[in-house]
Image (tube, rainbow, N blue to C red; front, side, top):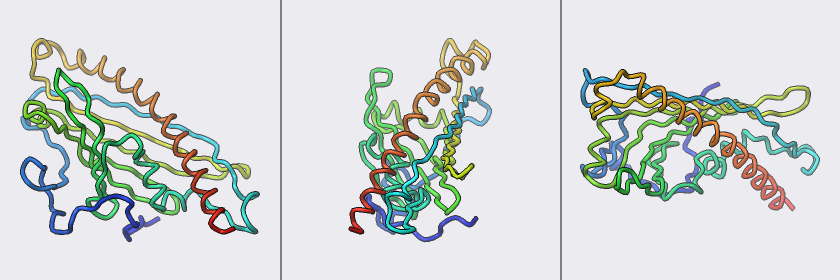
Length: 236
């Protein structure tokens, strides 16, 4: 199935078309680029986590009018659905960079006695068969010291959402994969094998993904329910 090519009406502030070949804000622009580590020969730790979740999707055919059914694919192709998959409630701010491309700024966190704000560039691709959220870039904004760490890690994430009908019941399937590569350059980790970083790091990341994915899916279905009922109210 070919992905949706037309831009959805965005509920978020937009960046002007003259700014769409962007470089990072501290350089005066807003370019989206995939992260690359600064030292090609540096030692690296590769961390990963993944989670699959299947959940029953409520049926709304009985509360609709006639054959009017608002399938979840319609929701995920609607601006309200984009807000839901991006979990905008948890964001400090969000901007529309381009067609289906969004810059999401998370609330500031305390890291090594510095306040930093994670900034994610996320691409949302919706079709009648699936919805994919892909992280194209992940950076820290804050002190110059913390921003310098952006060259020492790279991260990628893919959240693939599909739906299916089994024995007349509809299910939502969510498949999340997260990968982080860290440059090992500080004492005492430089004297340890990569596994000394990867073992604890993988456990921490997996625990985080195992906790957050089910919460996100439940919130997504809650937003879907509110959207369907709002559509039905508009028809009355």
